Every structure is written in structure tokens, then in C-alpha cells.
Image: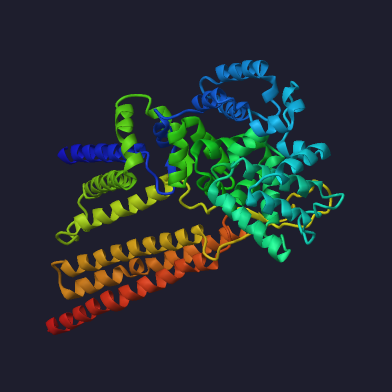
Length: 555
């Protein structure tokens, strides 16, 4: 009866520890949605930033914030939408460019005084012949050398992506050159990016080769085709390097319907390089995760960009933690998981390991509840080793089943090829794309690690069995027979290795996982290595010793 009580107590506490581990919102290859939400508490929200932009008369950028807040159903988006409507009715002249700008208002007084509620991208506005002529005259009078260097690139004819600006079909290139000059004249670019663009322009003018400058013009044109002037300048202002500009422009081209979310992420976070890097790393799920971070607030999106991991959305756990004591336990650990990730992971795996050990202990008590001839066989001190090994195996299994995205490969971006496009306004990316496949992907590395750990566990179990037989208080002949009886156990690494390789090849042939012969054959390779070490360095010496002892005791 006492044994049954102990079994129930051990199982109960073991399951409780496992459940506590499942409640810890810390993961190896993901960031928990609750961590992102908690990071955004008390920080600036989308709605607050929208009102701030509106107070600065930046109606265009504020409207993009409102669109994202509306799509994410953020609290207060209705009031922000009403404020935008009232502002547009009160200031109809600002609708054309999305906000006040003294240069444009002085250059185009007629357009500034005409009520215009229709959205117009700044590139479309600049490409109109009369507007280009007026803007060209204004910039040619500029005393700034950087503006003159940009304007001088209009005379270059050795272009690849655009028809030359002086050709009848070159209004797209002419317009984006003038637009770049206006950005420099108004100091709308970060000093580092401005310096890079001016350096490329000087190099193009000196050598008559604009091929390195043209991709920059293409990126600026792509953004100008999708944003009005206020949105355009605010999107570009935090960008400090040409590669970041290229990656963001490419994202806007690929996800045209999500340009409001991309603008909001870049401006709100103030980290354009981090946004570009995150969306390049997670090309399939990144935008949805960034939108979730935006809804959480400034702290949420910055935490997401710092972690550089996908968001995990555990719906079932969210329902469980609504009730005490789970609620108190979960939210007591939530802040710790955000500030001390590895400590939280250590606590989580301690719960799993402890739960697995208690369950293994309960199993051993239940197994030996009935007396059998096997009962006296375990050697002294080995019971804890068995239970520890079972706990490690349990930890490995629950890690594989519970850890999100552990076995999933990365999401490599597609890198389109740029082609020469002769038509006006057709400077876009080609439709054909090629993905760069790494030699060693994450899934292959995980497979190698998984097979190695499993073979190491089998090897450890065999070592414990060898030690158990060695410690038996029995005659050498009986120990030899026990050793022969465990021969199949000692070959378990080979059996498991063959099965792992076969399963891997089947999954590859069915297209479930990406082909990786190295990962498939590693299972058998590790099995051969571990079984060879076991039999040569452990089983063979023990067998030789027992044979000699049995012969010496023979009458």
C-alpha cells in the first residue's frame, strides 16, 4: 500500500513539474507572443504615434499608421480615423503631398492651393513634364555641390536599367534624378546615405559609368511610386546605408499591399536595417510577426527585432493561464523570460528534467512491485543512473515535441535579377527569381545533433547495463551468460541507426524534408561509431576478464 501511495505522489509531482515547464514562455528558436505583448506595455502605441504625426501636420504618414492600426484592430483606431478626416477637411491643401513642405509649396503654389483629396505618389507628380521643368530650374540654382553632382548624371547615356534621361523615353530616370536632388537640397536623407549617393554620383560622372548608381535610382523610384512626399521622406530619413535602402525597396516591391505596415515598422522602430534583416531572414512569416509587434507597441516591435526570431502563438496555453494559479505563475515568469532568456530556459528544462526523473522513479517502483527473478539483479547505486538516463530521454522527447520551429529550416529570401527595361516607367524587377541555398542548412544540422544525442543516450544505457552486470554478486559464468543475453541491447545503436537512415530517405523521397544525404546517413554512421566503441573498449575487456576468472575457478 505504501508503494502505491509513493507511485501516486511521484506521478502527481512529476506531471506538475512537466506542466510548469510547459507554462514557461521561453523558447530556443522562437519568441513567445506573450513576451512581445508584455514588452509593449507602457511604451508608445500606434495610435499615439499617429496623433503625434497629425499634430506635426504629417497627414500622409499618420494615415499609414491608422491603416495598420485599423487592420490590427488596435484600440482607439476609430478616433484616429475621425481625427484624420477632420484634419483633411480643415487642411485640404496638404492632401497632395501628405504634409506641409515649404519648398514644394513655393515651387508649386497652384497645386498647393487646390483642394486635392486624391492620393498621388511623389514620383508620378514629379514625372509630369511641367513639374520636372520647374523642379530642374530650382535645383540648377542650388549652391550645393552635391545637388549639382546629382543633376550632372542626367547627361550620362551609358545606362542599363533606364533609358538615358536626355532621351524622349527617359522621363522616369529624369524624374528620379530630380527627386534625389530635392532630397539632398532639403536634407531629407541621413548623412551616411547622402554621402554614399553623392560618392556614387561623383564616380559615375568621372568615369561615365552609372551602373552602380542606377540601382539606387531604381530603389528611390520604386518607393516614390508608392508613397506621397511626406511618407517618402519619413521612410527614407532613418536609412543610413545603400544596402538597407535596397532591401527595403525590394520588400516594398514584393509586398506592395503591405507598404503601410513596412512604412510603419521602419518609422516606428527607428531601425530600418533591423527591419530589413528580420524580413529577409523570415520572408514567409516575418510581415505577420512584425504587424503583431506593431500592435503590441514600440517596445514589442523593438524586442522582436532584437530577438531576431519568429513569434510563437500558443493558443491553448493562453486559455489555460486565464485561471489561477496558472495566471499568477505565468505572469510571474513573463518579465523574467524577456530580460533573462537563458535563465528562463534553464528553469524550463529543469522542470522537464525533474518531472522526467520523478516519472522514471515511479515507473521503477511500479516495475518492481511484483517480485521476479530480475528483481535482485540491478547492481547497487545504478537505479539513480537508470532514472537519470530516462529523465534525459524524456527531456529530449519533450524538447522535440514542445519547442516551436526547432526542426524547421530558415526562410531564405528570393533575390531577383535586375534587367534592362527600355519602356518609360518600367524600371521594376524581373519576375524570375533565384534562391541561394546554403550548403549546410539548419534542418541538416539539427538532424545531425538529434541522431548524435540519441545514439549517445543508447550508448550510455549500454554502459549502465555493462556496469550492472559487472557489479552482480554472481559467479563469472553467470555474468558471461548475462552479458551474452544483452547482445541485442549492445547492437541497439546499429538497429536505430539503420532505422533513422531509412526514415530520413523516405521523408526525402516524399518531399517532406529537403534532401540531405549527410543528415540521412549520419544516423547509421553514429550508430557504427558508438557500437564499435562500446564493444571494443567495454564489452570485450569485461568478457575477457570473466572468461579468465571462470577458467581459473574451474575444477
